[in-house]
Image (cartoon, rainbow, N blue to C red):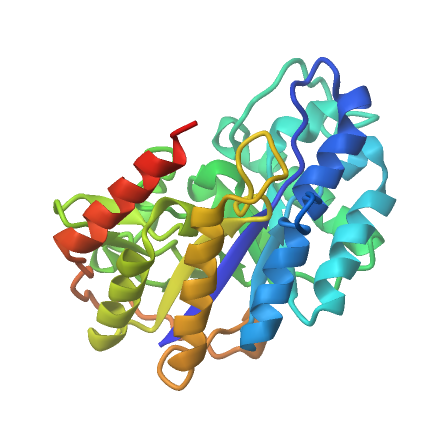
Amino acid sequence: MEVLLTFDVEVWCNGWESIETDFPDSFERYVFGHSRRDGYALPRTLDTLARHGLKGIFFVEPLFAARFGVEYLATIVRFIEDAGQEVQLHLHPEWADEARPPLLPGMAGKRQHLTAYSLAEQQTLIAHGLRLLREAGCKPPMAFRAGSFACNPDTFAAVRANGLRYDCSINPAMPESTPGDFVPAAAGYCGPFAADGLGCIPLSSFRDGFGRPRHAQIGACSTAELVQALDQTALHGWPCFVLLSHSFELMKPASSAPDTTVVRRFEQLCAHLAHQRSILPTGHFADNTLQLAARPRPLPAVSMHATTTRLFEQALRHLP
């Protein structure tokens, strides 16, 4: 079973009213995360993958560069590709009206999700994202992920129209991710499938110790939950398992200080994948080894102990 370790790389300011003054510090935090101890954004993420010999896929959001310049985006692209990892396209259309000039004609105000845009508008925004990555020196992307996992059938049509081969926008645990009849019933919103020539790779999910669905995000699951979900998914014959993290997920909110709980989870997960690489190899889209099959398989379920460990860890993280 192939494991896709995916990371969303985004830059956010403290608010839209002061982005000109906020952007330099925000870029430093979201990309490098320098603290007194180390760099806990991309530097720590890339170093951890390298130490364990793992492949990572970095979905980079490029629309901010239409306001602040491609040189910032080029810094991110070089950092990731020089580490031997893969860059793919991520898109948060909140940046569309901040571009100079705006990326769509007649833009007035923000529309947060791609699903608030027409097919033609989605196609145009994706094309702008690809253009910015190209100008930043990025290798041609093959895959796309919508911001906030907000997608609809127009999203997939726009992705195909821009020549991309894979879409990773479906998150079965989020109401914004509602592609309707586009998803075959047999896929159960969980397994990879092919539709009209597009490979759709949903974010993986599992049932926690209380039987509730939960998506496989490193900052939102205990190590035991992720390891048990991975092992069960492989046992049930799934073709791949998709994990989610972010460039800033190893840091405490609104800070560059490390979140020791998430750092430990990430290290333990990478150690498990390295130890089990013959069964759970990590991959890039460029490897062309993904299997697309809609045959229904059991959704993995983790133990109560694994889930209560997460709840305990989360409670500790919120203590002063």
